Image (cartoon, rainbow, N blue to C red; front, side, top):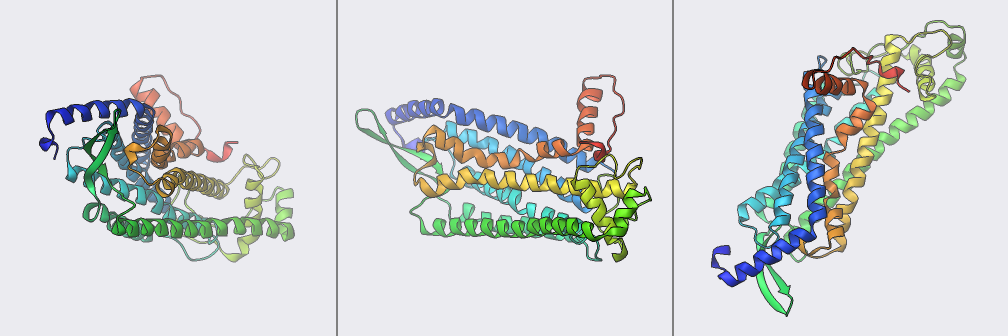
Amino acid sequence: MLHNLNSTVSSLLDEYSAAKTKEYAVEIIFLAVVSFFGVLGNGFGFAFYTLRSMRNTTTFLLKTLTLNDCLASLVNVFLIYDSTHSFMYPSDLLCKIHGFLLHFFTANSMLLLIPLAMDRFACVVLALSKRKFSITAARGVVVFYFVFSALIGLPQLLVSSGVDSVEVTLPGNITITGYGCINFKHDNLSQIVFHIVDMVVICISLIILFVLYGGIAITLKRLSHSFETCDKSTAHIKNNSPMKLFKEATQSENDSETGNQTPSEENSCSYASTTVAILNKKRTRLHAGARLTRQQRNHAIQLKITLMMFVITVASVISYGGYFYVRIFHNQFDNTLSPGLKVLLRTIGVNSTLNPYVIGFFSTDFRQFLYEILLCKLLKVKCFQRSTDIVQQG
């Protein structure tokens, strides 16, 4: 298509694209920074969860999420190419493939939060039952979501506009026609239908996440109420007697696969007591002069991982807001948007960048891994072994 343009029009489009590149400089810098830290953080996250010794449901799901987000951050880099070739995009096939990959990995970033929420639900709400969310079940759910994301991304290959003509009005009322990568048009019925499907999928995902984390919140509230009525358990704490906690059903950062064992109902008061103590931030001890048992540490880790996943979920949901605001309320070609709206449109990329940094904030083991890699091995700094007891963190 571009070969058919005469030299004058091509020259005008070159000048206009260069001006647009300068206009969108903030967006381009934003994309570069977000993509760089996304690849870096998720790369370290994937290495961390791949190299660690234990194999459990949480580790598998977080490894899958970090790999998906690392690839998503790489795909986001090509949005810079789109912004620097606003009206002279060279390839229809490249445009459609890029649109499909963006759709696929972005959808996965949202959908993979659901099995992670299911895992947290099983560890907290179903901790005293025989039901579990095994690693085999988690793999099945992940495969299903990967296939589903590919299916809902196919319209980007089959019905997307790809490279389409865009009229540009220059100073002096000169109108020229360029070619831009257009993955969504408001006047295309089939694309509108698939856009509605995207919205429905996201809404259903949000409902599922709300139900799962709502169930966790209700359970923690009930445990607090149960603690008030468990006189025997309270006496155990006051008398410095060992607490009978549930057996190691819940996996920790250093323990066995999720749900391999389940506690008996007689330990429910101990479970409630420990939960309330941890929620009250008594993390270094549950009573005067007592050391945390391994089970108590594992239980505290489960609650901290649950909080971590909740923060990741909330951050992901917020990152989608700007994208859908622009898509719904601004019916125009991306590269004719104002610089502010263009940046707002790209905030969806933060969804793939924040997760490893949230993990690093909550996980002592991950910080220790980075400490050893960056300081001890790369910079050859003399290192010492740090404690990785997550429970001892404030």
